[in-house]
Image (cartoon, rainbow, N blue to C red; front, side):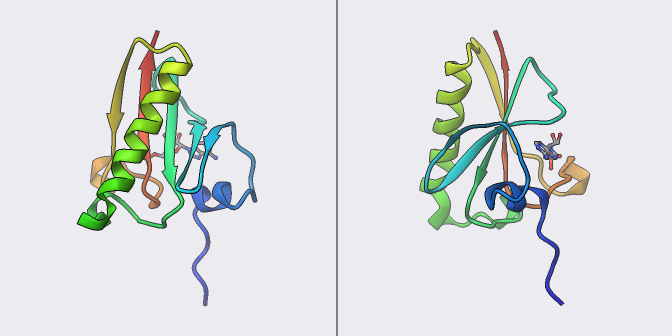
Length: 107
Ligand code: AMP
């Protein structure tokens, strides 16, 4: 039995629609469907890591890329201040088990 794709994998595979702000060979940036700040972006790596708990030293360039892409995109959208957040595990508020960086911005 194959596991059901999570919603972010479906977005990456263009099986469901989302507001895409940026994409490259390593990640995609979308708007969060239930924003918790005036600007709320999600930076989603194409690599199927479940959470920050699964990140290994070999992923350090990828993590830096996610953060700098998030910074560039939120500034482009006019944010003057922002927060970067990973929710880890259900007790940490994680609902979708495909690594994603929340970028929450305020103008
Ligand atoms: P987390 O709780 O860290 O797993 O974050 C998951 C986030 O994904 C939540 O903030 C949701 O609002 C958001 N989300 C869920 N489904 C979608 C979707 N189809 N498009 C965009 N954002 C979504």
